[in-house]
Image (cartoon, rainbow, N blue to C red):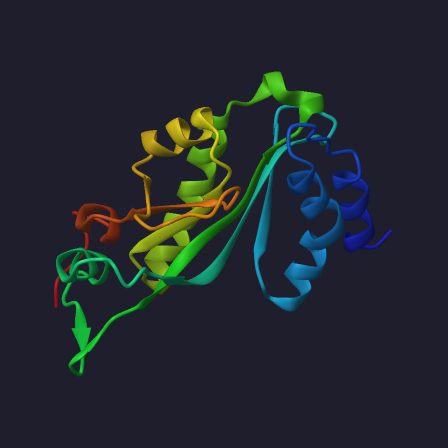
Length: 190
């Protein structure tokens, strides 16, 4: 059995009745997106369990965050960290790390919390950020209070813009300097 077939077998028993999009992405697009380099999907499982069971998953990717024209120069400068303009032109797009999907397997929902899933997710995001750079993490979610409250606990805030009815909310987290630069006391300076 190939690695792809094994992965397909493992994810075929993932169930998420609260949001079919989460289940369908994992089963129908995650492997294809991996092959195309569009995103990376990470499976969370219990290492102590003899049988491999997917407890949850998350997907991360690179994204362009387009900001509303109504945002003030001060807020744009906060996104950039340096300026609101480049060569005299207002900045309207920023590179971002997208948390594209986050889902918990209904079959094992008591074995992991949403908080724990986000801890794994952000740890992975920050690991990649240390190697590649970037300062903005974004995610999109339905306007569901318990989800928004969960993401707020991790420092995400809703992007200020006019949302259409049933449009996914864009939540962003701008990494602080202490989150951006790994502190290593043993590191020699040149």
